[in-house]
Length: 64
Image (cartoon, rainbow, N blue to C red; front, side, top):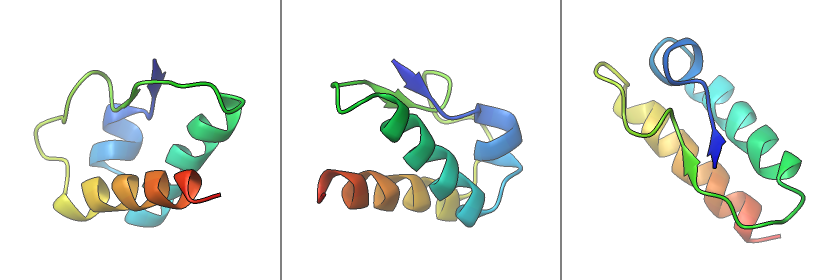
């Protein structure tokens, strides 16, 4: 299971920071299948833009 930090990045970070953290988790997986998450679920207060940035990073990674 690969996690993006739920509070520092997910809630308090910018979409750019969420994208970078998501790509970092995916790249460190070495191409192995992982469950991508932000601490097991969406934290209260996580901006919609950050959720969208995480999904976009996943799409970008998977398109390689």
